[in-house]
Length: 205
Image (cartoon, one colour):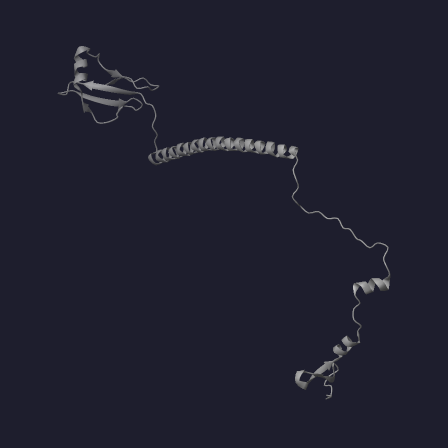
């Protein structure tokens, strides 16, 4: 059975009917591309192409390339590798020792730096206190005065950089040892002279 259809566009042509099993036929819309494929000859095989072109002057092509493949090592190669292993192990031991030494040196340096920081912090606190108190501690000439005219005796310390000399702290009772020394080796009359440009005698009695 043969049927035809009216093309709806330029790519559509008359349909062909292909028989199927059982004697039934099914119409398929045929396009211009199908018609062009049927008009092309089948591609020639390689043998046919060579026959048509003739035998070329060279029939074998060789291309060089590189690939990493296992190769047998010689005795010298093996000896070199063993020597290289010993050398690398020695280098590792040396670098490890160097690292340990540098670590110890670094720790010592870090300890020194921490100590410097601590000293600087202490100095900052000291200076801060001096600013707040408007004074600092210095070595000052002082005198201890023992006076047995007051019952059990009295001992007092004075600073000589002030005029008149100032008590450093409140008077305190003399110790038994101080009293015994007082009678064993009686002192001469006491006159203290503070370390000033203008000499001044001070009687503490």
